[in-house]
Figure (tube, rainbow, N blue to C red):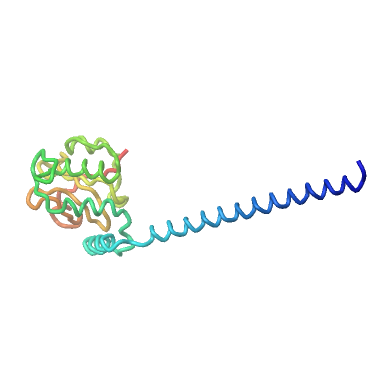
Amino acid sequence: MSCFKFFKTLTLIFLVACIFLSTACKTGRKTIAAKNKKNDKTVKSKSELSPKDKAIKEKYAQALGVDEKDINNLKLYYFIDEWMGVPYKYGGNDKNGIDCSGFTGLLYREVYNKNVSGPTSTLIDLTNIIDEKELKEGDMVFFHIEKKGKVSHVGVYLQNNKFVHATTKKGVMINDLNENYYKQHYFKSGRLK
């Protein structure tokens, strides 16, 4: 093979390689740019709240006495909003009536995807007992209302000393652990194991 043919072949291979690499790089850049564009939209859509989400955040920020930015688990607050005011019914587990342990179990299933069920005395056994000062959103708070020393009522802690529960008089509602009645009957707090 002559020197001229060798260089001609080498030049042709070089040009084909450059065209191939140039096309591959452009395609790669487009793919990366398209992915980044998609990610930007995803981030924006997550940060933008619907009017309904904003209303829920505002409503429960006021109810709990916290800033709207502290209402992060919208699934929890939508669940509470849906059940607020449902009357108490011993052994009940639907919107016609629900008791405290039924409400707590349903909340855990719907909001946290945890299978928690049974009477209050069983629920306390499913938790690690924690100090009241360590309470976090989603922990359980237990009370001895019927007999001193025996757990007979449960609620789910929210924020700022507030908890949600099914009461015998007013159904599902939010109360404050600092209210005299609940201070007097407070038993223990627990975090699901």
